Length: 482
Image (cartoon, rainbow, N blue to C red; front, side):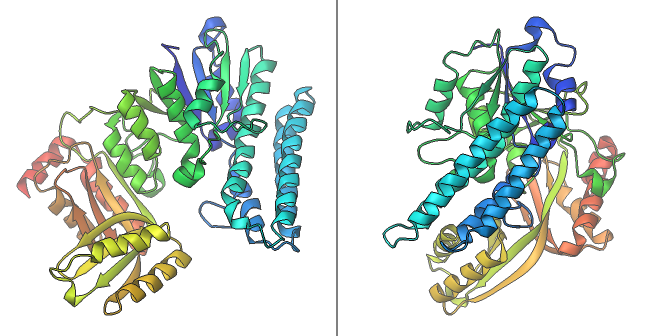
């Protein structure tokens, strides 16, 4: 399978199917030019939020309502599933109005929803008995529901392509009717065993079922992991992600569309820093596979197909040291543990990490001195409350405090610029932003600042203006003089 690409279409992009067809899948291609590509498809925008829970607000979807329901109370998740069915068939109506494909699209997703409804009802009845526990099955329930979104969009896209004369092939990795306990790699290899990329265009579900579960390890980043494994296992020459935006030097909504610069090339190290701040070019575990296999990743804008996008590879380092991206995240909890007797005593750091791991809290960054350890956490209020309770029990003499902050970072493949930290600090001070914490490692890939949430947008704009927007030769001159 040499000489092909593996490409992923995100949820926002696939929701604009006409643009995807016109700019990516077909465009001006004819005959053999249509093939030697594999496409991995995410669920339509908003569908996974409805299936599980809203990624940002936490509003419960079908899964969350089912997990919280008692055996006697089924109406909430049933009603949510009814609304989901309406949303999915409405997408079908919009895409296939007056066309014969409409019947096939509806029959496919209605059958899967009916199967899911039956399975959930049976499971709820079973777990009403004391010998069975619902919590042991929730991981499988979550994956079953998540797979509906990717199967819906991939099946529909296959229908769209076939109606236009393309020999598209629906590749279903969800194992909906397959009881074999396969690993993800085994499932992918099995699915592609008889695929002829010279004559077929595989449209693959962004969810792949594996015997030990996918979401437990990768959360909602599962589609990028599937995408990465397909690229590695089929020996792709390139992996391409189609998004609704360019990978740019900052959020254009914060610094202005005229001020941002598209990132032409960078490396996987920078991509990891972005992922750590919740701004994933690709899931870190997905990037690892591509990096080890030596497969470059291209991030392209779905709606500007003529642009070559951003190339991410393992060995790239910018020709001159520079800041490439200003990025960050709001809603971070700064958890500080102060213990005067900590000096010279082992076990505090390990104890805190054990508590955070038990409550499945993600660490954005951490810092410590003689008697204080601070973790910046990506966690919801319930998680933080439980963490604090456990830490107070484990370290009864410690003073534990929390504060909501934002993290803003200057990131680049080579930040070896004299005076960069002082210039970044000065930019924030001049913008009236109070620096609550600063972290910089000797590897010089990023500089992180913790600031008040209210100062987030101002901090991003100030750092971008000082470190990115000015001419690079002028920047080096200023930094050298600092």
